[in-house]
Length: 287
Image 1 (spheres, rainbow, N blue to C red):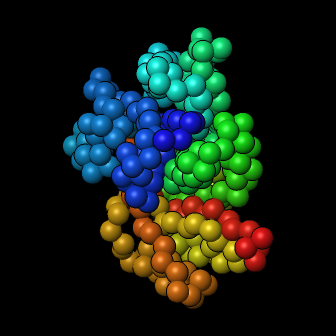
Image 2 (cartoon, helix red, strand yellow):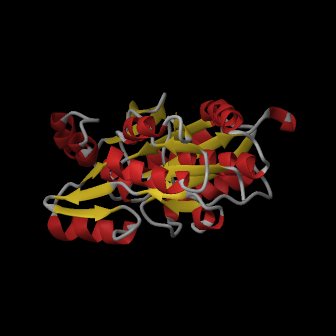
């Protein structure tokens, strides 16, 4: 068993959903709030049940990061049998997970070496960083070396996406409410990216087809890709994702790329019907 244990939060997604269990990764769930009702992300709410609640309640949900006390409970449990933890979390600009994890680590200083990393990412981006950290831990690397490796990879992650409605972004104060109300009337779909860990508007597009074409333009800029996935509100490929997959087959012949449903935490920002691409850029010529 590796000497260093990995901890992350439920915004992390993995192409293999069993990866955390197989590799003993501790996942601390966010809370998803629908009005007065609260759910634990990945525990008692799934992507499918999330959208059912959106449709049946009409409530715009919010996500709350795990508390310092929740992180402390996880760290203390691990510290009983180990002395090193690397804890990798949702971008600090999208939630308080990194801050709360950092606060929780302080009382254990001297008893357990806990290093907390701001991934500047989310979803599969965070998941890929956790996987890289696990591989390093299983190879016997120290916590300090794992931190160095992960921080060296964060700049190779790129995420762009568009949303069907800006209401969810506005509810999270990532988009003006007046703009969100006008967007559907004007037929505008916001096209965004995650840059330096924050959601940044790139441009506005007039149709879903135009938005998909922008995604195709984006993926066509990469000549070296280590990982790439299409994110959408359903894990089943639709006409839009098939169009994108067809282009990927031309750009990267012989390779297969997954279509993954973004989870409840990210869905509180994107809402139903959104679509995006996440890329982990490869090193040129395998160097």
